[in-house]
Length: 94
Image 1 (cartoon, rainbow, N blue to C red):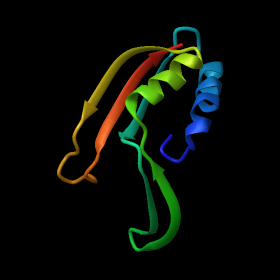
Image 2: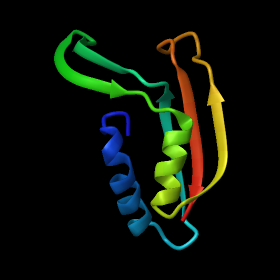
Image 3: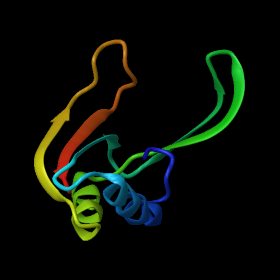
Image 4: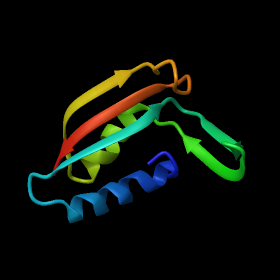
């Protein structure tokens, strides 16, 4: 989901809900915040990629409006070998 525009979250979650079994679980992970980081080079290769950060409540809203029930949430800081960002995790049930 880090490559989706904010307006694309709900439609993506609607499709995920459609293909899950009744009571199926969905775990989403994302960088927390409101920025976009662009990379032109990654691991020695030319790329053109954006990483979108999302506020936790915006993702919760997109999930619930798509028909999911959020059952658990976790935020954490980065591990030493990771990019310096906060991570968000949401566990949702169809």
